Length: 452
Image (cartoon, rainbow, N blue to C red; front, side, top):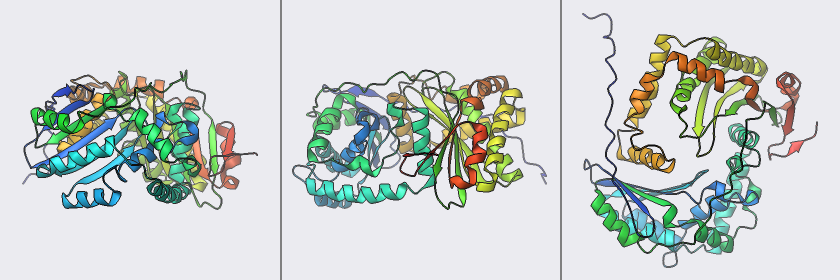
């Protein structure tokens, strides 16, 4: 009988599927990921002009509301007719206005490809923007946004983006109820005309389809798509990250504290991305990471703490967040910074390094198991201008990250002096103690500064 498990074998590289690419005469890019396994198609359409960065600060809801209303009726189909057609053909539709782009998704059987594309093309090219539908959606959103302002995680994320990207388009992460004011059919129609155009759109079809079929369908249903030319949004130079500060969001009578510590990093196509991904994995990538083992397993300050790395086209950030016992907040911040300093001071052990590599590679391989996730990987690779062989090189590059490179990156990017601390708590319990980490600015749940 074998008493010990066999040692793990070497991690082999994987072959990312070929993704043919073409463009229509109107500029629409068409990509396909062929997988004949089941008779189904996953459609992803990204519009690089139309994300939250394109909306004015005072009307931040303009981009997501426009995207939402695309589904609520066209010039020839009511919202109810669109819904009935989706039910009839088993079309699953959803859309999301993200920071830098808007994403429309449709999943359907191959037999429904023409009804699905017919509906989507009309939604994109001829939305009705009916005032009655807009008012119903605005009322629903107002309730939702008001409820979100009571959620500590939401408040912390909003404040972190405001702190790290002040007066910059990247601070436009979270909506507020007041952003819905004054948005009617005229405003949405104008935003749609300016930002929903084929020259800034990419259509990706994954599943039971090849490039020739995809191009023919794209020409038939999107060949007449036109739009006004639109300039790129103004992205002011952020310069060097500022020294760390503390933002305290006053949540009266809160019995628990939301803690978020974050700092700016770099754009998604930066050459240090792989190394910093490994830094984040060792530090807070899961239940075997240092922060989790320290603050949860050893100290019992939280149920879980994790780090997260996000890269945009022009900058990025790394955050460490947890729901903390209020009486353990200060000790938690000190332990987090101590772990950051330890990573910069000491090289990662070989066993820990191997585990982090396996976790990062395993998460990547899991995304190659279905056409839908492969489609999103390729769409984002294309959107962020990453090299064509980006995914072919992914596993070898992760395997090649050394302990010395991790230590050097930690020293460069985990300096506590450059990190901002956001706390959502009852100010009476934590404000005085937080001052040891720097000047404390207090806000209410609506984001308004409160005088001390």
